[in-house]
Image (cartoon, rainbow, N blue to C red):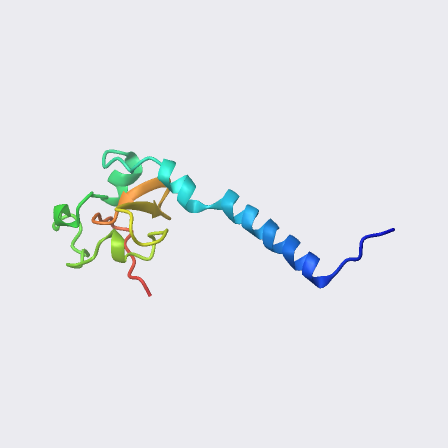
Length: 108
């Protein structure tokens, strides 16, 4: 005798599969293992990345806007909370939310 396929059974299966997929793709678990951007890294140097926006060289980066930091940049990823989070400009690495680089873009 074949088991009757009901909407409830299908929905339970989808919910379980979605939960497993979300756990496997969780950016938080990968972000926690990622290294921090070294300010001496060639990509960081090229973009003028600093760990603290107060260290920005204003002569070299006159476009710096007071109050801008990684925390209010559109490139920053992840949920608010951790002091170091992923950034679109430094794939696989974490930046300080207090930092800044010339790739800064205002959040919309």
